[in-house]
Amino acid sequence: MEENATERGQPLLDLRTLVKEAIYVEWNSTGTALAALQSHSDPTYIDLTTHTSVELRDPEYSNVHTIKSVTFMDDSTVMTGSDDFNIYAWQVPQCDGSKEENSSILKASFILKGHRSIVNHVRYSPSNRIITSCGVEKIVKVWSSLPIPYSYDKPRIRVKKTFLSELSFDEGLLF
Image (cartoon, rainbow, N blue to C red; front, side):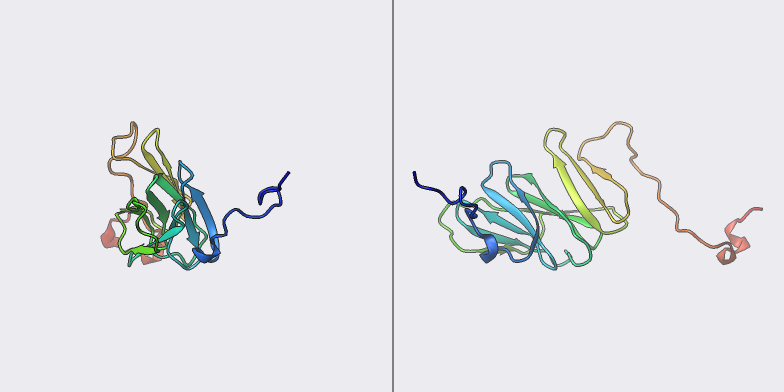
């Protein structure tokens, strides 16, 4: 009987030529692609059927300060958090098989804004069509294009802490 690579404990595919220093990877739902995140770099979409990669870029995206994760919204939309307090998503065009070279997308398809600090993790629920995110601020945010029962249309805004000595009586300070 002939032994195969997985029985010998060898990798079936080595992605070091496409992704260097990966800190997180995620499969798409069909197992035909990976989204990879690297320290100090842009996310990468890896098509396992063509062995090509697409670097997902945006001029404002940053991944320098904390370890983050990456996720698929659907089989061709990749999302991740950023050091600039936003969530970035890229729609990756489907390959027709004729293209066999690596490429880049230079602008995010959409950006969600609303966090007050670095966004480390983003997840998407296809059954609820809801995005959740969290990060350094230690708050979980829930994002939906549909109304969410018992949610705030205009959430309360946390006021910056101010020392009593910095307040003036013109600001309506009562004792």
